[in-house]
Image (cartoon, rainbow, N blue to C red; front, side):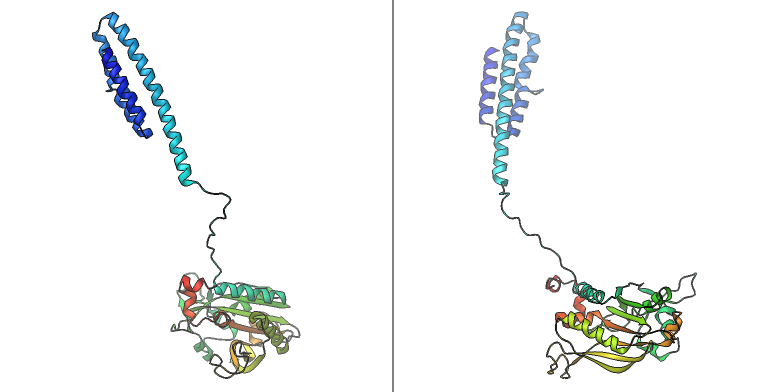
Length: 345
């Protein structure tokens, strides 16, 4: 049996020397010292020997067991250290090297333009106000001097919504941000200087220059002695700063039910400098806003005395202005989600 113990030790020691992984060391341990291992079998067979043989063989078997366990631990530690060093060499990084630049997102062109517009108007004393996109018929039409049978209603292609059970008001997706004129004046006294940016909705065919949803920027200034001259100076300064060049303003008579007198606002073509081009249709002018002096009926709806105050209101399509500023050919690109388009900004 001593020869068998010597053979087990020799074979196991040789296997430990040749082992290349911690997993292989565990296999050797099980083969030698496990429940069904070779050395374990010798120890279990001691019961069949004489007392003297049990003592001699038992002492020898335990010495061999201790030697094998010691060599297994040493070899496992060696292999684990080698494995860690190998991993470190493979995964080594130079912490002094600059890291890879993470790609950053950018603000949507509409957001960029709105923030710039808000900043310009804020420098002129205008506060930025927001309002609900779901409006009542009263604030969207009636209070703005557009009663139910008014022909101007045909100017808006409206998304009507289901009426709430406990409400008598008809609901709709706002067709313009003008309802905030009434809402704000109802709770504030003059002087007033506000702009109202926000999304509006029109039920119309979508093409390169029209969409069912777009952004509008409404403006309102009310005090005792506000005139068209005040409006013209403010709007000229706004467009000059927005387009970063000197802009000339032209007002053309028009009609809006909530202003009187009303006019279309044209600016000198930012492309050709009024020399005439395809963008301005050889006219030298671009139509970018509608405006006018606030109609007396609008003041009355808000609880103001039109004999004591006066003011102007204006509205412009933010998408259209963004298309001019950033030279965007199709309004549908704003909501396309196309990263090739968005990365340009």
